[in-house]
Image (cartoon, rainbow, N blue to C red; front, side, top):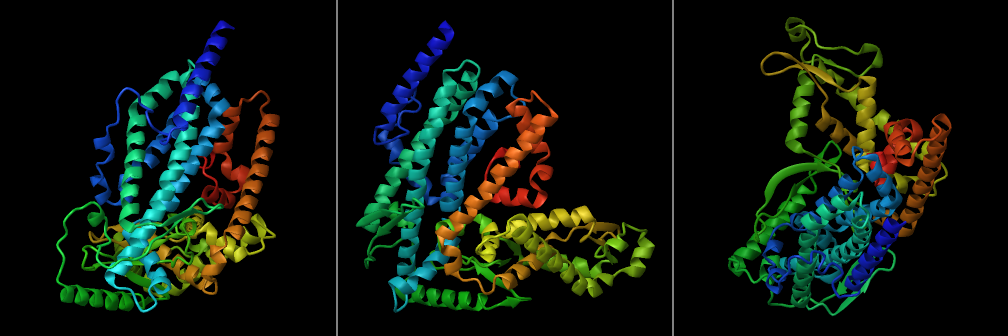
Length: 522
């Protein structure tokens, strides 16, 4: 009793201490009271010259570490029992932080921002945008995304640290929580405050007049007018000198860049768009690394995340095609599955793959058609806009379902002679990805950006997915309790994880993984 009262008292003190911090301007200030964060450290913005995903990566890696440390299945039962009591809240907050990183930071690369700015040019510069006007739109979207993420991160870390405070005053979890606080809290606090300081400088540089927060998504939108004179790059915001070409050379470079992009985006490769990606220098010298990719129809931060992207490098695809042509057998028919044979026999049959392209194309496309129909009309029937739902599921979901089922059936691999004239067996993933991209482009040819930009439709569909997950999860829990009475929560969770394909269905597991982040589904 005395121990329980003492721990309750400590917990109250920790919460009071945390509350006082949360009421301050900086919710992560002084998380590590052992080492003061100096003004000089906060105002050191040079890291922001690097890609923003690298600068803010500690948020993502530390959040993943929190999950790994507190939900490690090898932890002693007494620790897992304590974590079980508070873990749901911790897991939810961490997953929301990871989600925000994917939505706002992962889409703030120069490549993504260039594309977004390109779509905005006509709205803000009807007569055509110059290079600096384009850079202005890039920098403004950069500010909006990173401001949104940093505010979200502060809020989520605040809630995560409340749970960590709870673990700090409980004897079983104190060492874990203390180690986490000592190793990472100061660095996170510094990163948040430094990001705030950098964004304040960027706000002044852009001369932002108004900031509005979307009540549904929490995204920041700003008003700022383009001004002649300033150069709109991060290096200029940081006050770093930049060598620039004379005006005539810069204009010529911009013209060549625009012409090259126009040429690249019209290049057709068996129904896919092969496009070049971008910008090694301020003069837009092109990096000619070619990719084949699905187009991004959405124009919002939340529908341009990596979940909506699927791409394959053109050289990898071409290499896969050459190997396919040389194949002495392609496993297309379940009645004719073959393995490696001796070299002499393989040499006689070499080149049969060239005649199998049409059948292979049919196999992949029929499999994809079958999975999409099953998802929409068996797994999640009654959807108002099934085509929109499938688009939001994303090409990576179908890619994982396709690859797993092909391997399970023994289909899709090729057998050929390698450069050493030895028989090899290979799954041509680059070719399969290209065929999936073709199918995706055809399937969603009539879908518009407006269709996939509706957050109301998206949120209703996600709620339906979560409702289905809760129903199947509870069914699985009850089934396990009946089969193994006396099982603890962690024992049931472990069983559900091991048998998730049976409990939820293998296709639904992939859909749930897309929209619901938790360790059970990984």
